[in-house]
Image 1 (cartoon, rainbow, N blue to C red):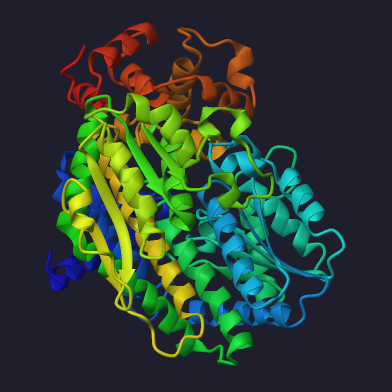
Image 2 (cartoon, rainbow, N blue to C red; image 1 turned 90 degrees about the horizontal axis):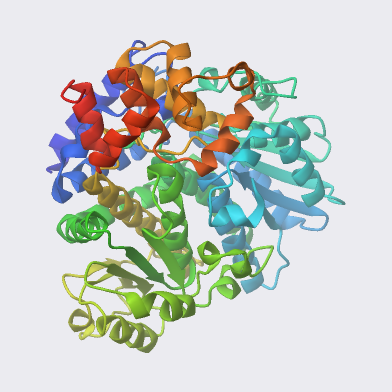
Length: 609
């Protein structure tokens, strides 16, 4: 799509979703994106175009100078980035008894883990001790599987933070909650606000502060919005910071693993890199340095989506695999392997997918992950992530309905890649590759002979004068790979029929945020009241024609725990509301219409009775 035409479409879309009446009172991160309204009916090429436009909104400038919604390039956002980067520099200059803690739930916690390890490696390169630590709600199991119940506990968040920082005198705490909605992170920020002699708290999210979650939280006297407002008051004196540029609604409504995860990575890496560069090369931390760094990441988006044809080809093949009850496997190396594992794990709660549908494996497994709790493979097959596990458990039954995607860079031992590809080719011809090289070091010419179709190969240019250039290039490779894998897994599930319009209709309601989101979708699609939507959801959840008083008066946490063992809860509730049928009849209809999207469409057009 020509650049000017795409920019015009994004501007019109932003003018629509920024208008006060658009899907009010939903926060921006929960709204539907006008750019992706019909993405469920798109083919692979159109899916890529839509995702390209939606991802470009991350880097969109202010539509007007007095815009209500501040963007990544806004002057006020740049100034906060400067201020926080200076706090990073101070800790790096005096690391004794100091710590930088990155914390979040789900995708946010996984990015916290990735960046904590990455920047500790930079310090090790300079013979300096680590100063970064990560926290993810639910512990290391949540790196690979959905552990959403802990996200609802502010007291647990505060407890884990206190334990992590025991004995430290100076802590820069960065809590990530894309929707400004996670009680776990709010509890940590509240703990920081009560201990400002030790902590400097930073909140990263992508809604305006007045859209932060304001519902009461069980067993806690505050709301997320109240904590956010306290931080804004303290920001005037630089005792706390709120970094909350708006990046627009997600391509798949509420799927913050996509733009939310991308913007989190861009913001965090920018401020951390600036702090490190100030220490290592004495470079200035100022507005221009911030804008240059963000612009470098915008270039990653442009380079990645310059491979539209190749990306669409992989999405098409992955979609066919899922449609035919096949599987998609990511085989990666180093941090790109971790990104593959993360992307695969996020499909389960997002699309109601089985864990076997898309799986990630990496060379070295947990020894390469370097997570706090070590090897978790004894916990079950979902935690078996080593390429050796792929060879022993997956390769013997691999078939032509499966898609295998290799993810690697020119820094890897190409003989290892070639050997593994040969083993896979003995079972299936459907091999794909996502690979990164740079101008000074390129892949051998025979790489094109190893894989089945056009390979998705990116060639990168070094930045002049950057002392950590090779390291920064790897961060670019990571972001590019994240964009690509998000597109592949999202596109494949769209083609399988797991999306209705631009909603993840088959999500699992395993925490309070998803519970509220599910009821909101039922209201939007049927015009029912909140109470009617909740009753239908509970009937579907418990497979009950009549609800007991005990069920209707129970706390949401009981329902979200029950949701772990339930499938197609939201589609079932939707059929109940649309047709007035029983739970068993709704489930039977969904079994007949194996594609959730088609079942929903049939109900909404009253074709099905």
